[in-house]
Length: 84
Image (cartoon, rainbow, N blue to C red; front, side, top):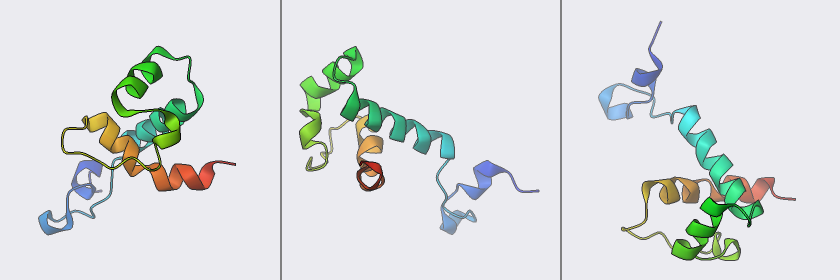
């Protein structure tokens, strides 16, 4: 049996370079919340810092962005495909 943590290591360190599903799922949930729940206090704070949800898909990543925001940005293409 192989530990999940070892599988998530980069290939050059013997892993399969997979992402931990919990972190990816959280990023998807936060991105969805950002796009759909404008009355949420956290969403309002994120909008004040990064702009409105309408600019989420055009936002250009910056070095100073928070880790949470960067994770959300990595989910954009998948979120875009899931929006109807």
